[in-house]
Length: 395
Image (cartoon, rainbow, N blue to C red):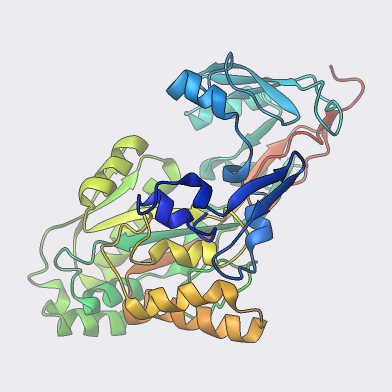
């Protein structure tokens, strides 16, 4: 929301008067938003969940418990009826929804951490819609219930550029050149799209020619120039990922690639998600897995992650030229000029400074029971249930 006039200043405490932030209600049906500068993607921001209205009195009255089912006030097609954390949510149709009552009376959303359990629940009829784990995708590939769609979601490994040996750009470049990304779809089995650039395929700004391609000989030369010929003398190094089957498969693949092509041993550590995030915040390891899915379908949402002031930049990296290019991007209306700008910025990020290694663009793989109608998958990985309906024979 920092494109809004004085939003960043208010957030940072530089101004304390909220009336100076460029958002106000001119009438019960008119909201005025003033921006610091022209922003081509701003209409998409208004559809993102952070802009959805909230009842200030409810938040202030209940504090951290304002989202509890008995307190929360929402305006969507379903109302949160029950929330048993780490187990299930129950959503009930909202009779007062402005578009009318949705076709389905109730939706049960289960939290199932074990993939085999989820698959069993699907096959026994307890689940109607399920996102498939990698191990199950080959089994369902030719099943009429199988559906898939590429996502605006990138997967990468980042470096803490302040920690040796990755404070040397040649080491970072060597690690990027030593990965044969073409093998990733074979390992994950979900139609993933290998990429060496950061802006995902399907989004404006995508350029598959950018990034450090697989070149093991170049990788070895760079590592040797950095003082580690054939991996000799390379220090003990740890990489971290959050616990998930797909992440484990990628970690094992990278570990083998760097051992084969660079003769270096990287120790990988798996941590539960909350612990993982806390570690990244406090003291990011030398290497770590992260990803990003589009909040709105514009390259600024991906490129802004790595500006030096971004709260999502875990790399310890900053580049003034990169920051300047990303800041200029949203105001450029000519597509060719805007593409050229993002090409420059991506080149700095993934090649010149090699602050992170893009690996692949994710694909959502799901199975849906045939009696479920109206499901439309989308590249934002949002599950819209207000248009869903069940065949009349199904209650």
